[in-house]
Length: 210
Image 1 (cartoon, rainbow, N blue to C red):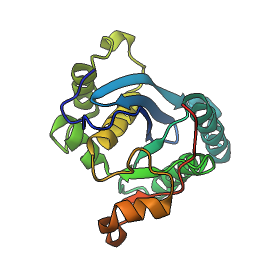
Image 2: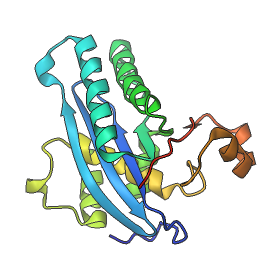
Image 3: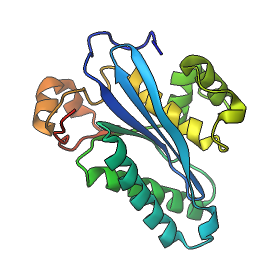
Image 4: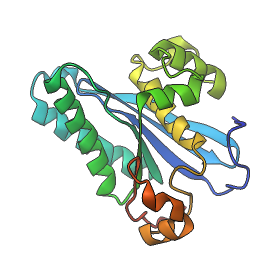
């Protein structure tokens, strides 16, 4: 699928994993970007409803499943949605832990990550920062030529994660560049980022053979 937002000079394939954190259902998506072509490799969810109220077991499942996905798809970068600010403090704490565990899994494999606010993801994909989950899913089906809704994953968390990955792809110049091998090189190539690193966390990228 060719997308107008993509930069044609990025010819090397890059794998981006998107994650929509959750303590009951966590969405994930993996896309491959090569030049202006975006291929959806998978989008689905990690379902933790059967675990019940054991939060520690949920965190364990998130970590283990994330490692499995990372080892299967070998992503170059992780894009993850930042927790929104809600009124339930306990729910916010649990959601933050779930996000942290997903990030920790990537860090354990030396994968850089970037956080995106929910409104930024919606704006990037639909043009509206207040779009509903259904509107995001509809736009993704149109943009990426996804299968009909009856063939899609049961939970919209999967398309939310796909939106996060696509949002990251759209942020040319604001994310981790393809081919960056180290934090030092990233700062050398992007001196303007030294004064503003609150949205981008970078660790040395792993060297991997294609």
